[in-house]
Amino acid sequence: MSKINIAVVFGSRSCEHDVSIISALQLIEAARSAGFEVTPVYISREGLWYTGEALEKIETFREFNPMGKGITRVNLDVSANAGDLWAWPPQRAGLFAKVPAPLAHIDCAVPVLHGLHGEDGTIQGLFEMANIPYASSGVLGSSVGMDKIAMKQLLRGAGFPVLDFVWFTRDQLENDREAIIARIEKEIKYPAFVKPAALGSSIGVSKAKNREELERALELAASYDRRILVEVGITRPVEINCAALGYGEDVMTSVCEMPVSATDGGFLDFFEKYLRNAGVKGESSRGMKSLSRVVPAPIGEELTGRIQRMTAEIFKILDCRGTIRVDFILDENDVLYVNEPNTIPGSLAFYLWKECGVSFPQLVERMVESALRAHADENKSVYAYDSSILQKVSAGVKGSKA
Image (cartoon, rainbow, N blue to C red; front, side):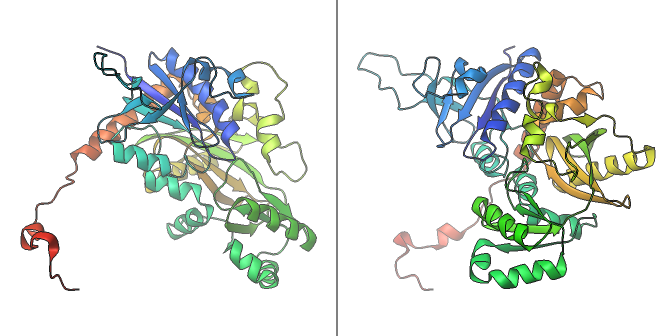
């Protein structure tokens, strides 16, 4: 029996492009250890697709050369059930030449994309149209999980505790700036966190302690997204994260972690998450694993159990699959809030599963298993309905009336 070939898809037109590369290279190594055939599929910042062995080396991306050795530009055949990657531009066969074959056939796609154009449901929709199994949350969970405004409104409506917030668009900010600021100062007050609605890795996020800082924070957030969220800023927040893994009702949760910030404000910015220990050699220097953290989080059994239950419930209500990570916040009075779910977490949260006795190769196996189960479930559904509409429409639709 031939091995399952998984396409690890990474990069893309996203501010989190570089983080995606690190997460993907980690997963590729683990997938090979698990016995999978692996086809790396890199989406450039311009949105072009490439494959090739050279894409498994971090050095390739420091000065990416699309014409470099071991790199081929490709297109995905999005016809339902095709799942083939073809060289682009198409190779023309001569009169007596063999018809060219696809470069690879995808049995299962593993999106390792962070942020827009990948984690937000867009590529998941593409795989749905192409009927290709994929090892990430579906369109619903991905899109809601990516948009902080929709996510907070959905979770609040489902009874989960979230911090108070206001939101508005870039156009509203440009046209009625003073009214927006007055509303923030009245409803949110200082300190406040200002965030682009659809970005991760703390990119574009600022903490504002006064109006001057708020002005700068709004400008920064508006430069990254047309929808902006401002939420209550807890003075000394404690972040607790928990991962979930599975599909449908079959969900397991990880141990909890407590990321540790080196700053007094407790705000984990991009540097804290990815670059603070970048000079350290070895696996721990790459991706989210490099963040200083306490695992398991020293929060007691009752709170740990509550966070794990909430993580599993959020996983189910968003109809997630594969692995996700849900981030929580404790305020100074030990009141717990859901911060946000990450449907494709940095480093796939493998460091949390490792603490549960699930190795990274085993994690990849379970992600692929969940993808194949979800795909089989979807193919059980009926997608056709016979009706007499076409028979009742005259040829050419002549003389039709509104």
